[in-house]
Amino acid sequence: MKKFSAAIIGLGKAGQGYDYDHVGGSYIKTHATGFSAHEAFDLVAAVDPDVLQCKRFEEKFECPAYQDVQAMLSLHHPQVISIATPTNLHYQVFREVVNNKPEAVLCEKPISDSLKNARHMLELAEKNECALLVNYTRRFDPGVILLKKTIQNGEIGEIYKGTAWYSKGFLNNGSHFVDLLVFLFGGAKEIKVIDRGRRWDGQDPEPDVYIRFGDTAVFFLAAREECFSLFDMELVGTRGMIRYTESGASIEVRQNQPHPDYSGYKILNPEKRIIKSGMERCQWNVLENLNQFLIGKSQLNSDGRSAIETMEVVENVFSLLCKDIL
Image (tube, rainbow, N blue to C red; front, side):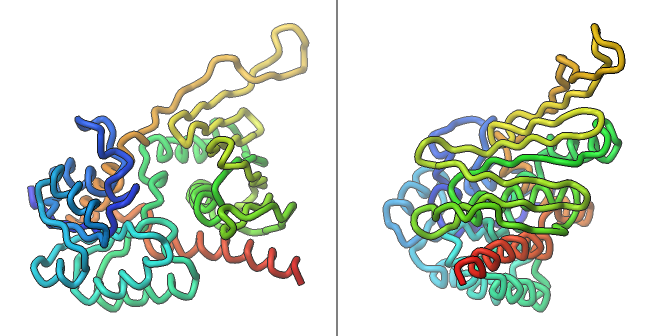
């Protein structure tokens, strides 16, 4: 099997933190563990300005970490580069690494902190013939892919309404649901702000929002992250219901059935069909799709174009919030 050399820029939670203390291959949540575990990639280096993070990386993954991007690029020429820095640095780092002509860049979500920068990143990627994959991990989850087929097959009929609970900001976490719903139903057709809400950490808005994806109306409701994290969704169709809960770890499908006692009435079948989620190995799923793309066997499930479509929805919401202020 051909191996692709890989480097990571940013060694925080998404870079190496979430699963640093896990052993074995059943829990793969970070870029570092993903590249280390996937047989198609050879993890060769990392970058982070924090000396302690670099030391932790070197101790576990047994390859060098640098405090500067150019220092790493002067000694390595990775074919794949992960950008796992804070969102406001994605654009700056991408501009720095794309000139090194990697075959692919895997960028954490959201693609950037502005639509203008995101579009320029896509232009630079195309100009340099560099694949740009954006890490909306649910698009790569085998459970979500099967869920999409379930919806397309009409198992629960026409899905006409849904609710999506999110916490920790509309850009940071709400955008995950936006991207997932675009993947399941198509682009956003209508957007309305129901309640302005507050700002997470004083920055990221947390509004309640109505968005129609295709023919499906979804109500986004903001929860308070400091109380508990929440990322749950329910979708109601003409023949049943879907519950997507525990951040995607649990996916349940229930169809309707005739009421056993009252003729002419229908209820939800108490028996649930469980769709197995692969979110515990979410980063391995992403890299498997990237590998299949690099060897010419698949398209990317999430790329610069789809990430920009998600970013456009987010910016439309923020634009409506600004108009409301005026």
